[in-house]
Length: 202
Ligand code: 5GP
Image (tube, rainbow, N blue to C red; front, side, top):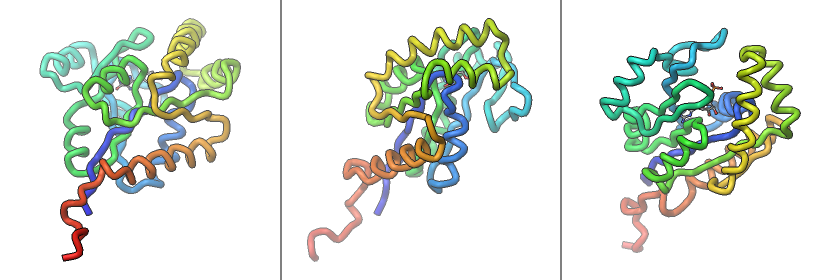
């Protein structure tokens, strides 16, 4: 039975724990592919080019825009971030589930182009906890943290445009929830091609 691929869009404030959640979910769903974004933000310690992001300078990012190589792109806290189109389209054509981590502006663009995508919003336990997580990461300046916290409040207000929400209080529970959402979405009749099934009793 052939399955149609679909895109899962994961958004949530910076520091909500999207990366940790993704790293926990990816090994549990064999046909789930992570779309690595491009960014003009410099790498944080330990981040690897081509794994965490494709780290580009402004000219290289501009060139990708000019060649229409992004499914979406947006500016976030002073840097640009974009989802490379080709990887997503190729994986979907092969029937994979693709997950992409984008901010609310990117999610809006994707919804216009792919209304059958699955839009999931990850909530931090509280704003205090979000601030604590951003500070303990130790990678952003105090100014960058307060900028991200301000954006977080605006982002949470956009939750009404999403299909599902997950509270990231306990990683294991959040992980279970995202796995369940993906499994349920995969089982939707509209995402399956039944034409090869002998359903007519012949
Ligand atoms: P960070 O700098 O903390 O890695 O990411 C900052 C924000 O950019 C996060 O909210 C993240 O979801 C978002 N982001 C990451 N990749 C993309 C992308 O490809 N497109 C868009 N629009 N946002 C992204």
